[in-house]
Each structure stands twice: as structure tokens, then as C-alpha cells.
Image (cartoon, rainbow, N blue to C red):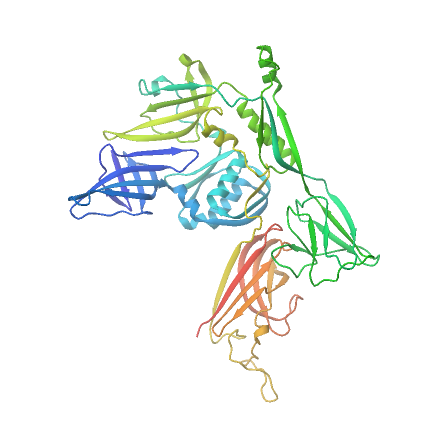
Length: 566
């Protein structure tokens, strides 16, 4: 028995109109028709939809589009097209960097910090691959999880129960094999061949990282830009020797974000080091030393000798079949591994696409299904289930299944070896600048002292501070610094970047640069005449508990609005 619910209310579906599909490369989808008479109901995008088959939930998602016809008659026909819960991942963005984290742990962080608020619960999330560096620059959570899955050679999906799964592809077996007694008679079709075969492959467009390099350059009294030999792959260390003295380490900030407050400014994938505009240019007796690693271009060649020999022995010339791929991997080892991984997927001629129908339930896209069809000379192999669709046959769901082996099918290639521009243990997606925004607020009461919105009272010969009378903060001293605490101990201060003061509110922005890293447990907004960059000075106007994990690959944009509450 098939039942469809929209926002928890069961609807009558036109017989024979229902169909749905699950696959590995796109959203799940469901379509059906509804008739409404006299008092016509209307449906709209975003309403929640559930499909049950004999009491078992088969599909969960939301309405994507609604088509209507027959309005001038005494009824309406509603054509309802729905999309699965994966669509929710498109609705949220992420701007965050991670270092030395497992891909599954990153997905768990995303689930807890972002997706939980959308009703998505963690399902089976395996730990995945240890990644050296991950940077997501304002991309959708869908794109971020796709990148993590592709890099880890895992699959992911949000099931009909709104549970997010992240699992190894090789560890997801089907509940039953493909053999004749599991197939509806005469529904099976087999296609064989591999038009994409190759046994030698070149990979262009990738970059490797140099060993650590040290370059020294002299100043000339006017120059504030210094060009190095390779574009930066990582944040460098910069030292300066002035007038023959010892080399002293300099502060390094993000070029293009701020233009003062650091000694030098750099940008990844750029080979120009820029001095602070208010700094004194280096003279001929000054030396700048840059210690860094950079990118350089490489071409990678991989081949499978036994495939070449096999074709040669069959009299097919040298046996070599070459192809060229282009992808922007970073790191020589990562590029070679990726090139060989792609080659291994194409260097086989034992490929097939099998389509069949069954009434058996339990198959899911991404499952590996054992195939035993000796009549087609296919035995003891596994195929990837790339898609499952179902249609209503007199109230019974009949499943159409696509089972694939090898790159003869686009879904197989996308599932196993889709080339990406990132690296094996590094993922960079979206904007190169990782600058997440964290927003805080406070509403002040009149009885708080000291008070950001106190009436203007200043010391004089007749007016003195007391336990109930505090001097007012001048506009330039209201909030001067953002202090950050690591392990509940103040670790540093950052000048306020922007401050907008009105009679009933104060809005501040502070940029926390690359030089800050660690687990930040508190933020404090510090003001007053005595507030300086020295820790412990000034008035701690507001302290808030936080849990921010900061890496040296990202800039935090800390925003705060203080409101007058009376």
C-alpha cells in the first residue's frame, strides 16, 4: 500500500502517476499527480513530502515545483515534483579552514555546527581520510561535502529520515546479489565495452610544492615590494636584518584584506611580498630573508605495463594506448596518485551496464552488488548500483535498477574517479580568502557599571569617580581592542578595525589575522583611556564565552552590536 503525506496530511495520488528515483550523482526525486475537487487545495514549493510503501518510509524531501491544469472545470490536477533532503545542503554556506583533520570529522563538525539547525541528524559517518589542509571559502555545504567525499573515495547521502551518511564505497554491500531468481522475467539487459580504454596517461595542469627555500634581498631605500622565485604555497616566515644586525622575525598579514598592522603582507599563489605602507623602507644595509615553499608546474605520466604487453601480444602494435587529462592537483605525490587512480579505472575492458527490474526492496545507490550471470559470461564480479527508480504498478512498487562496472558509464566515472582541482590531502574550494563571520551582541541595562551608554560625565575639580559614578568613555575610547583568550587565559589583543557609534548602539568589526591560532574560549571587548595592546590594561566592557577553532589559514571577522536597553 502506497501512501503520500504533504506536511503530515495524507493526499490521494492518481493511480499509476507516481514515480521516484535515487541515484549517486544527483538529488533523489519523486513525482505524482493529485486531483482536488470543489474546495480546491493548493500546494507550494518547500512543503515536506513523505512516501510510504506498506508502512515503510521510502522517500523524504520537499516539493520543488507544482504544475496545475483543469482550473475551469470542477477540479484541479496538481503535478507535484519533489526533491530529496540533500537539497537542504544547498541552502547553507561554509567559510572555514581545517588542518590535520579526518574528512569524516570535518563532516561531523559541519553536522553539529550548521546542519543540525536544518533538522539533519548524523547517521553513519566514518572517519575517512586524514587531510593536511582544507579550506572552504564561502561555498555551499553540498559542495563542501562533495569535495570531502571525492577526496576520500567515499559516498554520502541524506536519507529519507534526514540522516547524513558518509561511508566507504567498498564497504556498502547490497542485501542480495544480481542473479536470475531476483529479476523480473525478460527485464534484464546487458551492455559491454569500454570506449574510454587507455593504459598510459599524462596529467597536465598540476603543481608540486618546492622544498623549503630561503631567499635574501637587499633594500634600496625606496622599494617596498620583494619578488620571490615561486608563488607561495604556504604562509612564509620573514626576517629582517637592519644595518648588519641580527635577523629578527617579522609579522606577516594577509595581502588584500588589510594594508597596515603587520610588517609584511603576502597572498597564497602570489610571489610578491609587500612591506607595510607606513613602515620605513629597507635601505642598502638592510636585508630581508624569506623562508618559504612555493608551487611549480609538473607533468605526470603513468602506465600499466601488463595491459600494454597484453595488447602487444595480440598484435595490436606497441600495445600503447595514450590519453591526456588536465586537472589542477597540488603536490607531486597527490598528482601521481590521482593520475594512477584515474588510469586504473579506465584500463580495463571487462566493463558492463546492466539494467533490470525487481520487486525486492532494500537496494540503495552506492551499494556494490555481486553479479552472477554465467549466461552473459559475467561471474564473481561486483557492480556499482548507480540509480534506482520505482513506479506504481497497481499499488505495487516495481524497482528499475542500473548496475555498472567500469568507466563505460558516466555515473561510474563520477562516483569513483571524478577529477578535481584540489589535492589528495588538501582541499581548496571557493574563494581563496577564508574569512568566516562571527556575530555577537549585547543589550546594556541602565544599572551596569561601567556602561558603554552612560550619560556624558567627565572628571573635574568638583566631580570625582565613586562606587556609583564612573567617568564616561569618550567616543574614541569606547571600544579600542578585542582581546582573545586561549585556555581561559588572555593570549592577545587586536585593534578594532571599524566602529560605528550612534546614540543607542555601537557596531564594531575586528579582523583576527593569520597570526592567531588555537582554541579560543573567550572574547573580550576592551575600552577606556588606559587600554593598550598590553594584556590586562583598560576596562573589560564585555566578556563572552565562545568555542572558536582558529587556524593560520583563515581570518576571523568578529562583529558585535551593543544596544542601549533603556
